[in-house]
Image (cartoon, rainbow over all chains, first blue to last red; front, side, top):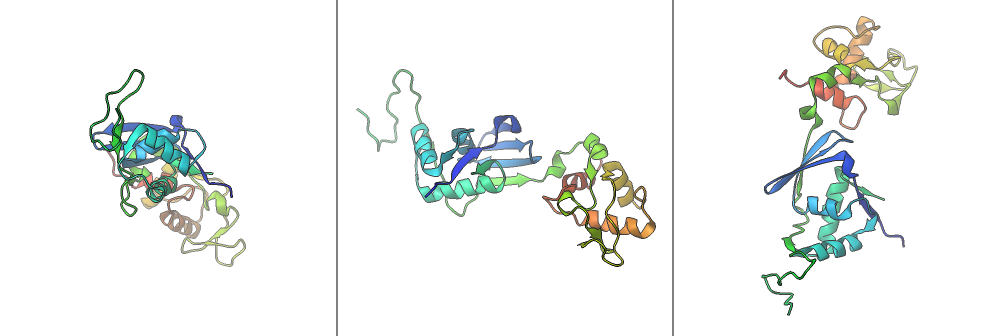
Length: 91
Length: 135
């Protein structure tokens, strides 16, 4: 079965401003501004423009961070949120 | 020696960086708050933006007197506007003026349609920005 792949919005369409605990992301394509907390910015950075599966993303995050609660279900919940607001595309 | 369970990260070797802790969070706890586009609009874009009546997805449909989108040819409804209205025209219409090229009743129907615009409909961002108080 083909796995669902994910890709972040292109960097040129995003204006990302870290503000201590939060990160402001202005998405030029939608005109929406999002106030996000970890791990959203980390997921967007890890995805970048690659088209990868959630499993590959979890692996990639695991190499970059000490994941305190690595789980497919939790990562899927975060990905679904990012897809819902248009910062990540599900392919 | 690398102890995977240790809270203290191992000494980074050459070319490596110490890994930061990251939590994926709970399933029900969203990490995202979105701010509506109205807050991000400038006065210039208000004047230049456009509102098609109806939006492109429903082009050709008529606008009923209550502002709803109805099938073309519906009795008592108004044909679509031939050109999208400019933000400035809509602003004047919302303040009691009349949209260019419309009759009194047609204008009323179009203004009701515009007031009912939802996010995701073309013209919504333009309409939302018209709601902003003057800075």
